[in-house]
Picture 1 (tube, rainbow, N blue to C red):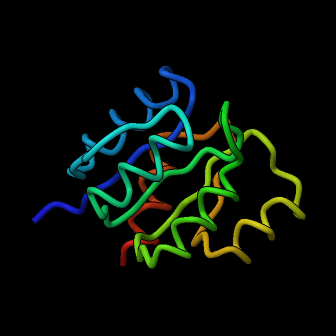
Picture 2 (picture 1 turned 60 degrees about the vertical axis):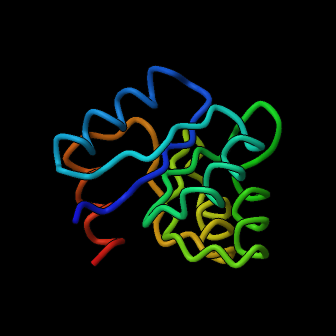
Picture 3 (picture 1 turned 45 degrees about the vertical axis):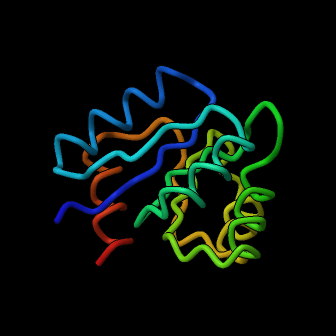
Length: 120
């Protein structure tokens, strides 16, 4: 059975890029969210194996979403994706439970590698 993934990014272009790369690698995309509120609802509803989570969304930070999902007991693996790559930001994501952190721009191959590693 294909591993399920929820894509969270406010950019339709980024969501499309991530979706294409992951579908070509045989992952099943169970949903896409462009803001934090939708992301939390979809994550709790679909219980995906993994969530790609942008850190800067219109209504809240990815860190806040990560915290809420962990408090709700969601066990999905979370890979943060952001244009902000400062080590302090990366470390904070990992402290809150993100399994990995990808800095934009990234390659499709790099994304698939990180997702495979996170799910293995």
